[in-house]
Image (cartoon, rainbow, N blue to C red):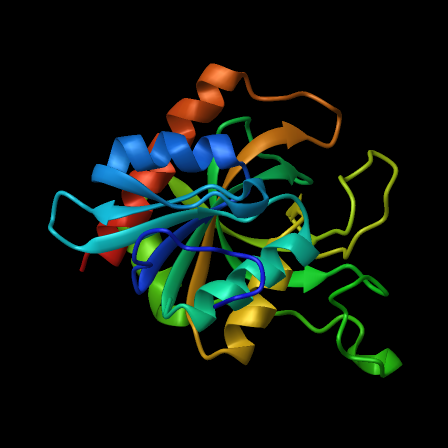
Length: 226
């Protein structure tokens, strides 16, 4: 039995990962037929059930920040998850509109942060990559709706005057940690993010975020159902 999750229903081999427990419930109601709560330990709500295509799928919240996401994904790997798509939020560092969907093609950990695993100075800017097949499937499924981006995953919420990697187009708090853990456990993973805020402090409305989360979740579910 994993140390953090305490599953009360079977965990599927495919999972959608979201930070917010409320968003996990939203997507479970939207994407699963008769979803069952598969975890409520530590407030990390998770749900399992069948998609309309008849495939088993788990939707699991990961909490806030990279350390929380990492330990949840480690537990999911122990429980048999082999493919996962993160449906999360990000802050735009470049010229994106609120509500835009973006697909992470590579992500940089925060230099000197918790998930900077390369101690050598020349490797401090080393990016972490997603699974190429899952990422390509997202690109094809969302052609014209989502752009590929380079992200940076920070240990704290992005601040307007914060310096980040110059290639980063968006900032979030989990993607690098999830990619690193997935690589360690030979798990396929990709990330589809919603631009929920801008570097200037503007934020997407709750209604807009819910609508985009449903669209992103539907795309992720369709890919994991093939």
